[in-house]
Length: 100
Image (cartoon, rainbow, N blue to C red; front, side, top):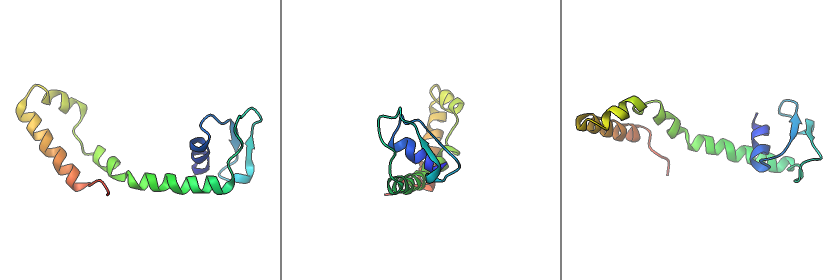
């Protein structure tokens, strides 16, 4: 899956098939306007995507604890609810800080 994602990021409109994750088993279609990225380019993109995933873990952690859409809608009409939601968001951001 990482090889597929890397190629899709490097050549967004590419048409290709692949068996598993094996770079050597990529079938690159002639209809592609761009050439198949090299194995080293794909490997570098995989590393970059994995780092990006790690760097954004805090977002996924926060999402699971943030108030629901329903809670946010209710808070639009009730100042006390809004204050509670603001307090909860601050606590979650402290718990899962954005990396520098």
